Amino acid sequence: MNYNKAEFERAFGISGQLPPSKVPEIAFAGRSNVGKSSLLNKLFNRKSLARVSSVPGKTITINFYDVDGYKFVDLPGYGYAKLSKSERDRFGELMEGYFQSGRNIKLVVQLVDMRHKPSQDDYGMIDFMQQMDIPFIVVCTKADKLKVKEFKRREKEIKEELSMVDENLIIPFSSQSGLGLDTVKMLIEKSLGA
Ligand code: GDP
Image 1 (tube, rainbow, N blue to C red):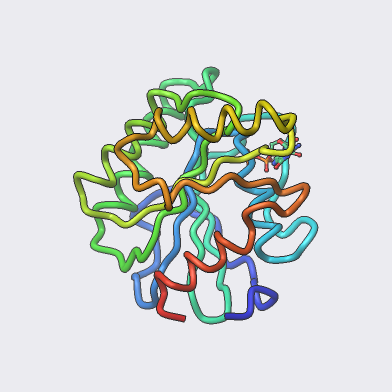
Image 2 (cartoon, rainbow, N blue to C red):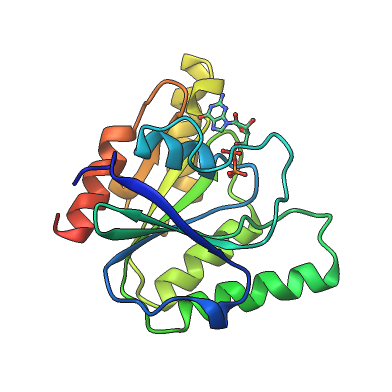
C-alpha cells in the first residue's frame, strides 16, 4: 500500500458523528506524548500531517486519515493528569463509541514508551482488546533515547512486563532513527491483506 497517499479527513469530537465503517481501519492508541503523531508522520513519510506536540494533552478528538483507500484512526491520547471532568467524560464517550460501533477494525497499534513499565491505562487497553478479541500490536516508542545496554535490558524487561502479549508483536520503535518502521508497516499490511 502507498503510505504517501495519506490525507487528513476529519477530527470527530463526539462518537455519534463518526462516519460509517465501510473500509478496513487501523487504529492508533496510547497515552498522550507517547509519540503517536510522530509515528503517524513517519508512516506517512510526512513532516507534520499529524500534529506533533511537546505539550501533552491536546484536544480530545478521533482523527481520521485516508491512506490509499484504508482508514487510519488516531485515537485520543490518554493518561494526561490535568483533564477536567467534562474532558474525561468526553474521552470515555469517544473511546467507547469508537470501539462499540461494530467497526471494521483490522488492527490496533498500541503505543507504549519503551523506557518505562507500561502504565495502568496501557494495561487496561491491552486487557480490553484481548477481551474484545481485537487484533493488536504493541509498539515501544522512543527506543533511540536508550543507550545500547539499556536498550537490551528494556527490550527483555518489557517483554516480561507484557507477558500476556505474543513477543513477536512487541516492536521497539524510533520515529527518529526509523527503527521498527518496516516491521510496523509489514504488520499493518498483513492485517489488511494489502
Ligand atoms: P503524541 O502526543 O503521542 O502524538 O506524541 P508526539 O508525537 O507529539 O511526541 C511527543 C514528544 O516526544 C515530541 O517532543 C516528539 O518529538 C517526541 N518523540 C516522539 N517520538 C519520539 C522518538 O521516537 N524519539 C525521540 N527521541 N523523541 C520522540
